[in-house]
Structure formats: structure tokens, C-alpha cells
Length: 411
Image (cartoon, rainbow, N blue to C red; front, side, top):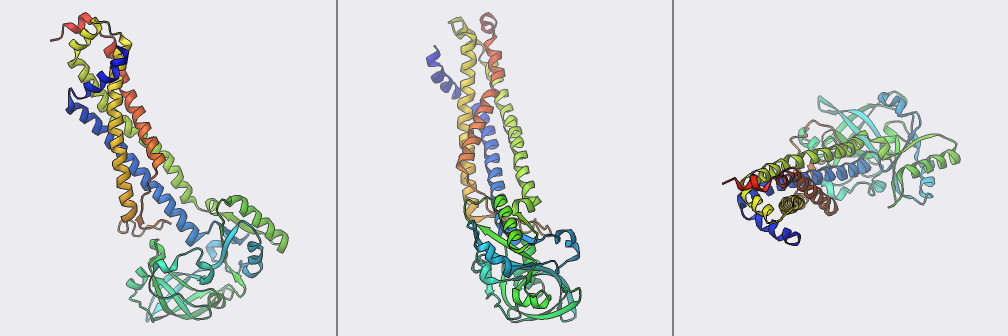
């Protein structure tokens, strides 16, 4: 009898196809939701990591050791010597590329109107390793070293009615704590992936911003990209020690993961969603429990007949467990496959959250691209099968304890 149980269980699924489909759909929806949720979270994590490394911190960031302590005062005088540190970085076998930047607040004057913006002084020749400017450049060209030119975001250009060739005046506080102004010409308009970069930030040549801010030879920070396989924290400590030994100065040198709280929170959030997944599958499994209980009461005479013919209680338990197993395999399989197809499609077209994220300053792009993870999808399928199959254990045990004489009384 035991050898025939799988065939019997599979046949029983089709005896009440409507209820079997209901149970399978419940598990399918749960698996579909979890696959797409984790695809979205994976996409957000990759997107945030790329944005942080490209636009904010690199994989390793070097600053003056005291800069963070006084950061709220914009202490541009606490800079780092890019020309002295660059050779040290290039001698490190783990370093792929490095660039120097200066970030500072400024007032932008257009006619009689002014607006607070953030400026970035950058060497566009070294920035190519960090930012794919040709991909985001919407109009015009990149600013050239030695010229009073700037690149702005498309949202800023639209809101301030700026176009290629327009000139604006910037006023800011210099490293010497005095005031200085400079007039820059718009030569490029770019569509940055992060909303805040589009709306209130401009990019200008590093050498002109050093002159403007009275920071000759200094930069606010140095961003470093590493070669594949390099451990960020270990390389950051190596660079710190090399600078200390070679130049005799202490720096604040840390990896991007140690600098970004939001990225750490996102990873913690992903762990929390594993518990949400458990809840989803348990919720879907209640449908299987309810359906199996109903089937048991409807098949009382059959259970009594099988018991009278010699089927043991353990065999009855296996029979109903197998029925639940087959339903969960089919249901979760369909859900996972549809979820993977949905994630693949969305990974190409993206999900536009531009309006929803308006006014929110996060290091994630306004368009999310979910990721397809075959290994993770397989584990979600396996997890769904296990949870859903175990959900039939309680009603299956109930069936195994029914006495044959009692079961045969049911009409």
C-alpha cells in the first residue's frame, strides 16, 4: 500500500479540483510576493551601493582627521593634500583609481533671485572611473579644467529656467572664512540617477573651485575605487597606515560600508523581511489547513474503508501529507516562476518612483530595477514547499486517529 501512496495522493488532488486550485493559488501568491519583494530589495541594495561608491564616498574615502568633528561648520581649511597622497594610492596594488573632490554650499544668484545649492569641484578626467558621464549627459559637454564652467542637473535647469550658455554667479564662504564670488557658465546638463543630485547640485572644475575657495593644492576629500576582490576595510587601514608613515599625518580613512548608515539599515531591513516571508507563507498555509480539514470530513467513509482494508494511521498521515506536498510544489513553483518573470521584465523597464520620492533625500535612484536571483528564488520555492507541506500535518494527524467504525457511520 505504501508504494501506491504517491500515485493515490496525486490522483486525489483532482477529485476536488476547485479546492486544490484554491490552496495552490494561496501558496502561489505568497511565493510570488516574496520573490518580487526580495528582487526589489536586491535591486535597491545594488543601486544604493553603486550610487554611494560613484557619487558620495567611493569604496574608500580619505578626509582630514578632524573634518567630521567640525563638518557642520563647513571647515574647508581642514583639507587633504591630493598631490602628495595620489602617488601613495597609485603604489597600492589594491587601488584601481582615485579622485579628489571639494563639496561646499553656495548661494546661486540668477538676476535678483538666489537659491542655496551644493557645489562639487571635481577633476573630470579622474571622475570617469567613478561616474559614467556620457550615459547621464543630456545636453552639452563636461566642464574643462581652467575654465569657469559648470554642469548642472536636469531638474535644476528646468526649475531655474537655465540652458546651455547661461551664466550664474556663486557666492560662498572660503577656507579662510571670508566671502568670495565667481561667475560660471552652464556648459552641460545631466540627468543624475539620484533626485538630490538633479535638483540642487552643480559640478565645476576642481582647479577653479580650489582658486574660488582659496584651497590651492588641497581637496576636501579623496575617493578611492578598489580592484575586484579587495577588502574595503583592510585596504582602508593599509592606506591610512601608508599615508601616516610616508607623510607623517593622520587621516580619517574608512570604507564606504562604515560610512553609510542607510546602507546598513537596508541590509538589516532585508533580514527583517525574511520574517515577513515566514508570515506570508504561514498565512497562505492556513488555506491548505482549512482545505485539508474539509476534505477529511468529506472523505470520512473513504478513510473508514481504507482503515478497514488495513491502511495504518501512519499511512493515512502520509497520504494527506503527500497531497499537501504536491499542491505546495505546484503552487509555489508557479508563484516563483511568475515572480522571476516579473522581476526580469521590471529589471529591463524599471519601476519609476520619482513622484513618490519627491523631497526625500536618499542615496537611491528614483527608478528601481529589481534583480533576478535564481539561487534565492530556489530557496524561496523550497521554503514555501516545506512550510506549506508541514501545514497539512495537523489535519493529517486528525485523519490518522479516526476509528474505522466511526468513519463508516458518515453518509
